[in-house]
Length: 185
Image (cartoon, rainbow, N blue to C red; front, top):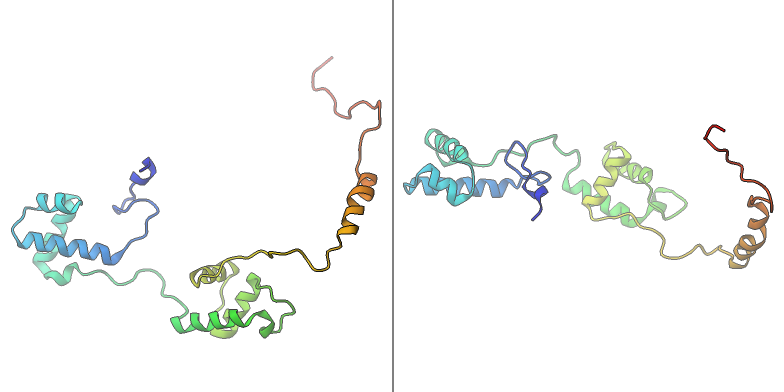
């Protein structure tokens, strides 16, 4: 385990770790059970692996509101603009391909994905967020596995060995370098 994994944010969660609300609620309920069995707050904190102050706060909530006071809070943040059904429609649209929307190639670009989302769900997203939606659906950026069909190996070879040397600038034999010294003479 590295030192970085021990860095803790202000809320008691390791840095970069998402909150697992179910796991946190389970921990609070376990503490409530131990408190009801008569364990001290300090002992409960040691057994569960939390700060004593947390157990003290949970004990107060338990006394004032019962076990329901320790239930997990509702989801925080802005509510999602698309439902699970919307995401299924997006997935179906992606599988049909961009040609179904009238595009000339089978390549999904970020702008095309934005267009698909807007047409299917009526939601306008930025290109960045459109890729987040794709990632949540399990889609990843792809690169072509093969070379272009139009590729002409003979022309490429001729260009590399004949034309490129003609275009490339090389110093003539005996010429001095073009850089100058920065030292004063």
